[in-house]
Amino acid sequence: MNNQRIVIVSPSYGIFEPNRAYERLLKKEGFSSWDCIEARTNERIIEFIKKQFTRNKSTLNVAFLGKEKNQYLALKEVDISRPWRISKENESESIVYLDYPLSNAELNYYD
Image 1 (cartoon, one colour):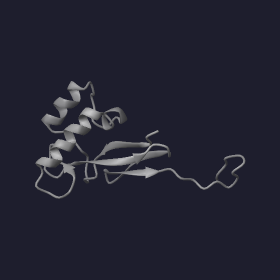
Image 2: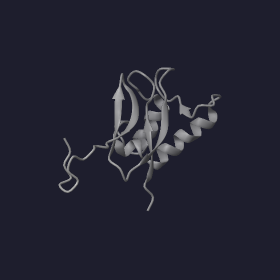
Image 3: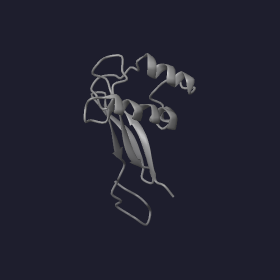
Image 4: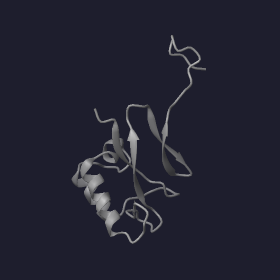
């Protein structure tokens, strides 16, 4: 069983707005927004972003697909066997695992 999934995040600061090429792909795939979890895990969109990596001159694996030059996307591998979410701080996104210490394991209870 594969517990790994690739997820699209926007680690750049500020609100990410897709450029025209990315918007067209999203619409073609049936998404009205880039930031729903279904679009963020769509295999065809992820492949499109991977192709953008090869076009970049940077050694960073980012895809400059925003309306502004400083807006970019990245792919993160997530262990989906653990609870997780996409966290935003100053509109910069990252993956956060929800690990809560249990105060009573028998009852699966935490403080």
